[in-house]
Amino acid sequence: MAQSGESPGESGPFAAFSAVPLRLRIARTYSPPPMSASADRSSSLFYSRRHLLGIEGLTAQEIDGLIDLSDSYVEQNRRADKKDSLLHGRTVINLFFETSTRTRTSFELAAKRLGADVVNMSVATSAIKKGETLLDTAATLNAMRPDVIVVRHPDSGAVNLLSQKVDCAVINGGDGSHEHPTQALLDALTIRRRRGSLAGLLVAICGDIRHSRVARSNIHLLTTMGAHVRVIAPPTLLAPGIDRMGVEVFTDMRKGLKGCDIVMMLRLQTERMQGSYVPSIREYFHFFGLDYEKLANAKPDALIMHPGPMNRGVEIDSEVADDIDRSLIREQVEMGVAVRMACLDVLTRSLRPNAGAA
Ligand code: NCD
Image 1: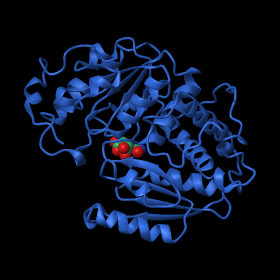
Image 2: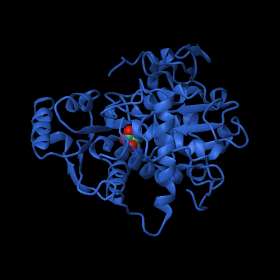
Image 3: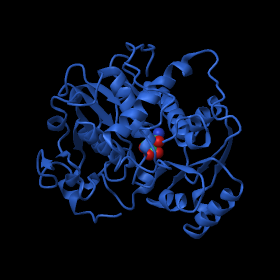
């Protein structure tokens, strides 16, 4: 049930902005103790859906199964020879209507390490006419008989729509401010390898909640897996209805961080903002940027995460981001490849006669 850590929007330095209309390092290589690799690569009984469009609606068993399988791919990615032939002869298309560095590269590496043929299509956002073009593109790509399409699109819901028009599996690589399921899965894998379990952890998600698909997917995943989630943001950057997602809401960073195990920072998504949501970058950093002084409110061993790309000096202090004892930011990127291999694996099992597809 939604609880309120404090009432957002009534006081504090950003109070005046609540009236804005609503519209829309890691230097050391960490080797965790071996997890109970309950992932049985030959069984996909835990996931029988055709697509991965979001975390919302997935069961704890499905999420656990995906994380277990991802964990089993981490070791493969640390070998000198990282490649196998599970997806030999399969075609994966990365269809990105928005800029991306790590997500697109990560999906490409994941597909190649599994032996698939990969085609990368980047479409400049400004050049597309939404809707019609999307469906035309879907029909065109479908005719080329791909096995998986990974789609990133600036509009919430666009990936879902596309999935209804093609015969292959679709993975949501991030749609508008809606969902980014593989980011939440990689965050969960990163946390679980460090802490052993997600259940019972207190996780703070801080910053531009309103425009963040990462926040939404993480809230769904973490609450489903028994973690307690706090969102911390200025009132202007809290999403409407966020308090109904089973999270505690804070507009004061120091109060919100109290006792937290994990501090997840988010980028200000200026590309999705129409108008001014923060008084100034300087003031934003002063009240909501993660520095050691604010971090001192969290547990002494609290870990720091960020999906990237980071804006140093805006939402996170450079030293904190590079703290080899606290920051998991580079580890998150590593886990991303393993998670995407697991997703490609499960979604193509129906194409492999002996893969134990559900
Ligand atoms: C995130 C995204 O695109 O939603 N980045 C990512 O996938 N690594 C977060 C962001 O862009 O701030």
